[in-house]
Image (cartoon, rainbow, N blue to C red):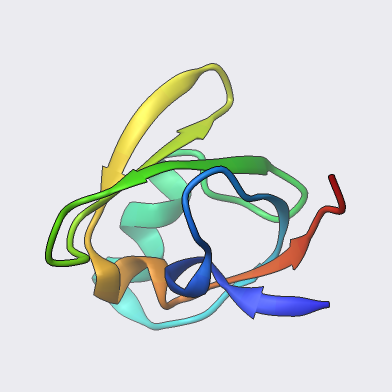
Amino acid sequence: MEKRLSEFIPGEKGTVVRVEGEGKIRRRLFDMGVTPSAEILLRKRAPLGDPLEIYIRGYELTLRKTEAACVVMEEKNA
């Protein structure tokens, strides 16, 4: 089932299907390694929901909720 990274709850894993958005946000995500087929684990979410801490390609990365909303994921079953 596809859903956006911003909709994940801590502990959920998934694979990037596509990165939407335009210009600087899309380029920034690609530069940080958020590309199709990359596996992502949502580690934690700040108390007010923004930012999100993810684990991707062997490192931890913090994304704003608006950036995470551009990433369409395929949820992995546990």
